[in-house]
Image (cartoon, rainbow, N blue to C red):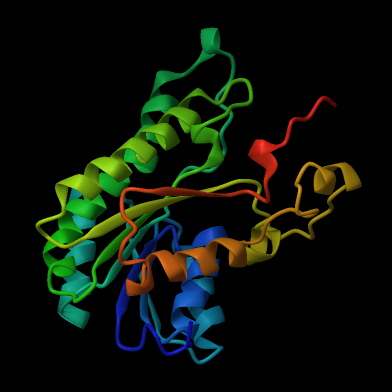
Length: 260
């Protein structure tokens, strides 16, 4: 896809200050988009802004907690004031730590918070983004789910449930927004290494064992760029016949039988 495909298009990325979100922000900005990053972590947001603007990219940062309806309303009002429309909404914000402890010790406040951010957040953002998406020629919503929507480790109740719900929300939105011409899809990442895409105080150098690599048929752990490349395609009119779908990007890990 030419780097100018997204020229003059506006892209909103929730949770865009670090990790996969930051990788997508860079990719869409490099493709010519006006990128709006939103994130609850203002420190990370300012660092992301400095990082991307230092590369000559068009990016703005607006702080927002996507689980709070009033903050989401203000966020979209600010996007409208600056850009008038929205071409792409990337629902990426989420509480990433999947472990919440044993069932008998589960803190329901933690469970509720994970669902509020990971599931309620995408719904709120989609709701308030819709009037701006309707002004775009080829509007698209992309939800960042997880392969944990389909498989689990022990004690990941909240995260797995939220991502499973996001998968269902994806096809529900897709069939509900047909008259509004909005395509809605999801990407379910597997193991994506984000150590070099964290804010400065949390950066680390990845250390992967041979066993880590061998768990993936492609022979390596994933990178934010792997998700970004797919997002660029799914949100473009090149994918105009694709809606309500979920693409697992995991290096083949979830289809490999592992006995060790």
